[in-house]
Image (cartoon, rainbow over the protein chains, first blue to last red):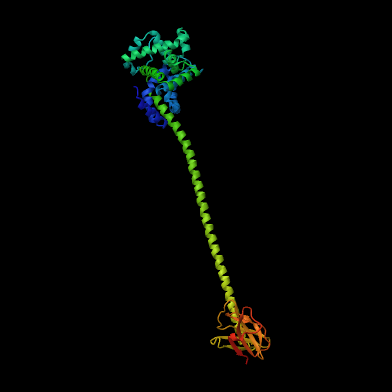
Length: 178
Length: 256
């Protein structure tokens, strides 16, 4: 569900006014999307749920630092989630014990059915070439940096930016067709 | 980096995932803020991301939401407590300040009261003192009069009115042995400022000055007179004269 700009503006305002209902709204609408990113980054449910908690508490505590001129609210929340998950993965305490997340397919076997399959994720992924799928998934949904990707997929670092741009463009086109 | 590079070479996607340096990010941000084309291009990328994110979303367990809301409540309660504490302290100090002010005013009022009463008490006592003086004086006069009246040593000479003042009367008490002369001014009227009554004792027609006086309540002690046939009162200039102006003769009486 994508909220209109007006709804988002209201939510942000209410959050700043310490309205807990506004945070509840964000959780109801956006927690799954953020949890997917965190889970794919860490591969561990318990750790991921802890990170998700921390992320929403951070959203609550740092809402004053969100600047609309720098981007959309979801992007801001996404960044908090992605960075938090990466920090946990890099920490000494965390042992990356990922379930086998098939890199080839976006539709993972993560043990939990997602209600969003109905939204045609499989169809899109089927139509997107393997490399683009890998690039987008690793960079956007698994918390890998361009450097990580360059090393793992053996693609020159300097080409990754343009490749990703091209893949995102393809993905956008496929989505518009649905 | 120029605008075309930023849009076409994947800088915006890299900025979104954080795959740029701090300087690069600053440059991109300034373009985002100032250039609508760059901003639109970025928004498209944001849209694609959020759509994908929803598509790949995974539901977390229910307890996560509970924990989040509990934590938020705790944070807010703590902050509210602190806020309340400080506002309570503020309120309390206001109450203290206020009650100090009220107490101070209360005592100031009482002090003012006391001041006023003290002042009026002073005034009262002064009034009492002065009326006491008056009474004393009156008492003195009366006792003097009585003393003289009952004393066998004093001769009573009534001074009767003349053509100048037919209705006037005065009285002289003369102690021939000690030569004391007391004058009762009777109904003699007040004079103007430049005039004064003068008492004369006449011996063989010769006038002797017995002193000047003004009309008064009590008996006035005049000058000593050892000999007198007659006592008389004239009007002279203030302070008296050496010889009487007999044309102003007021009252006169012979010594019997």
